[in-house]
Length: 403
Image (tube, rainbow, N blue to C red; front, side, top):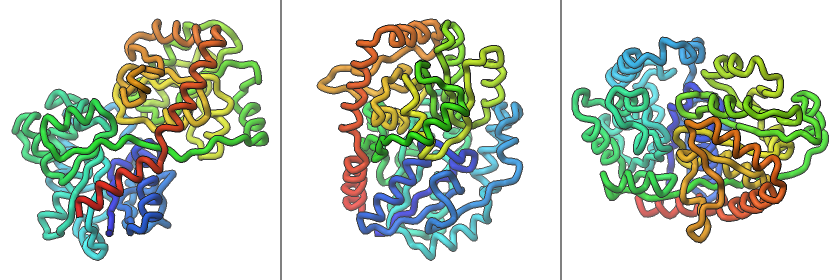
């Protein structure tokens, strides 16, 4: 079986959970004797050594994405409408991409972002025969509530049929695919209201926690984290509209104590805004993008992981923190009931719009060593339940049924 993994959403992101899911599927399904190919941009996890089509980023794309102009609804609407009609700015001519995909002749094409839809639809219109699968990371099923909202525009304007209602757009979108993958129970129920072509496959991780004293010592020096510090860590894209890191910064600034540190790992269009917010607090440290080796050590150095997102599918950083037995706090929107064990919620959740409530939770865990240890144990339990093998078993079963 030939599988083509498409991720045009990686155009603006060298890192991110969606691209890591693609990497896991690319490598994992190959180990299971499926031929996997990739169509997308080079990321920290997928490079030009991989089989398939690596698209070229425009030289100024990152700066354009960071500009306030690119966040204006009218600009976003015009861009998405133009992308559907012309498919410009892909980094290669659409007909050139078509011919290269035609040579691959995939049995299944897996879409990893809403922006993949126009290209995959184009392949079908030009006579390619394949089964299509969409992995929903939450943006199509739950966040697109209004036609011209910033979250709704990629679905309403970026999938064609401009002028029809958002509800009809959503039905058209999910019905196009032969199978839709929901990453959590909440999104599964949203999609199942539209189509019965949906499966729930939660993410899994094969990350292993290990000690690397040299890297840990180097990072302690570079990041100024002492052994007795209580280091709160956020790892992910710095994209305010989704990741909402501003609420974490505001909460942290309410907490006193020189032994408290906030470590923000990642990059994105909101970086400068966050740095400005944190400029009067030297305890807030921006570490930039890190590779797997450094991330492992950061998890080991941290005392608490916080994910304040406004929406998530099933964040891989949650599983990575769990593997490192790191206590976690998740926003109500980032928390998924799939993490429950025997129907019991084991990870504390907070209102993503309430920095005061988040500050109080962080302080309580900082001062209550017994509670901190309980949350460490809960994290370890989560890591044992959500393995990459379990995830790949589900994908393999679904893909073989599709054929």
